[in-house]
Every structure is written in structure tokens, then in C-alpha cells.
Length: 325
Image 1 (cartoon, rainbow, N blue to C red):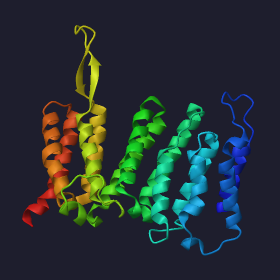
Image 2: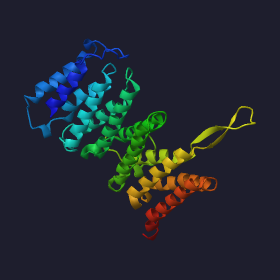
Image 3: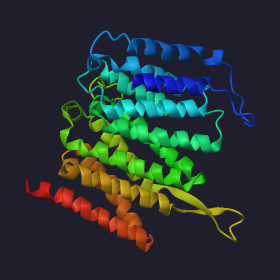
Image 4: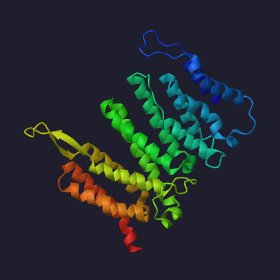
């Protein structure tokens, strides 16, 4: 499988540009390091030193990640490299017990979320962004996702949300895919909340970012993400108003509010009563979320009000059981 993926990526990188392409194809020596990395992996494939499931995943992931991170690589090759990473993740060649899994997973997040397409046509860029969303979802659903740091998890969510925002001016398919992916990420992250070990976090009420992050992601990322979701309810937009001297008035962005409510509902539903067992999350629900829900419930459209009522009902079902314990 790896040999096929390497061959496909090499073929696309070396493929001459189309005659009518408006984007210049850089000389091959500008990404010689990337080519050499792929060739080295091909040599390793036919001379394995140990069982693949015990090999450090970085050895066979890094060449593809190098392609993804290289600014001079054609968008088609970047897209193929993303599909190669996706295939490796879906086949689960490694898991959380494999040596080097933690570094490999976090390196994959860094490379994929840092992918930049400087010379790509809009259509090609949209295709690559769709594949980035697929790979980010596969990373969060992988068995070794428990080894991701809090920073990596937050970066994945932030990157997906940036695609949601950028897709507003692009094709409808990209926007729908980005929103679906965002919801899927939230469901995946908060479904693990019951299993998260929070002793170190809860024993120290410090918000110091230099706290021990060597272990996998935990309550820190859940708190940061939930705080971000609550902030979506307070997003405003400037609406032009006649007779105000060319100025405008600020109103709640209903589309963003609805999207935020959908994500909050997913987080609450997937975490169950566990969301109320963590003091920081419970405090945020009481102080931030409920404040926004009550405030906008009195001045929103029927659609937003309906979603707010549904959110309150989900909170009631999730937290009421704790009152009797």
C-alpha cells in the first residue's frame, strides 16, 4: 500500500504542468528534499527491519507530511499526500501503544493544519481543503487520538472553524462539509469526556499554560473548546441602517448563533452528565452559557428561540441527575 501511495505522489510531483495553466510550476530541485524523503521511504518498504505495527509511525508518515507542508508542491500532489495519510490512519497500522505514536499524531496535526496553498487555483484549493477536513476527522477518531495534546486538539477545532468561515464565500459543498466536520469533531471530543482523567487539572485551579502537557488531551481542551462554542452565541454583525449617517447597528449574527447552538447541543448530548462533573465546565454553563441563552431568548427570532429551548432541555436532562446524587 505504501509503495503505491509513494509512487502516486512522486508521479504527480514530476508531472509537467498543463500548457494553459496560469500557475508556474517550480523546478524539481526546489523540492528535492521532499523527493528524497519519499524515495527513502520506498527503500525502507522493501527492506523492513521489523514488523510494521512496531515501527515508529513518523517514519512512514513524515514523507507525506513533508509534501503537505511544502509550499512549492502542486496542489494535486498535496491532495494525494493527504489521501495517503488518510489511508494510513483508516487502516490503523499503528495505535496508541505503538512507540512514537504520540509524536507522530501531533506532528500530523501540525503539518496538516499548517498546509498553505500559495499557487493553487480556487477549485484545486477547495478540493485540498475538503481533504484536510477528512484527515482531521480521521485523526480525532483514530485510536491514538488519546495521545494528542490539548493544544493539538484545539488547533484541529480552530482550523476546521476557519474553513467554515472561509467557505462562506466559496462553494456550498465546502461550507456544508466544513460545518458537518465541525459537528463531528465536537461529538468525538466530548464523547470522551467521561473517560478523561482530570485529577491534575482539578487539583490545581491554575490556568497556567505551562502545566504538564506530556499526557494526552484532557479537560483543558474541553474547557477551551466549550468556552469558544459559548462565544459563538455572542457574535455580532454590523447591519447598514438608513438615516444613521452612513453608519450601522450591531445585531446578533443569527446564522452563527444557530451553528453555535447546534455544536453546544452536540457537546452536551455526547458528554451526558459528565459535563456537570467537571467544576470548570459546570461553572461555564451557569455563568456564560445560561446568561447568553436567557439574554438572546428574549430578543431572537422564533427559530433561534426554539434552538435555545432545546438547549435548555438538553442541559436539564444532562444535569438533573446530578442533583439527586
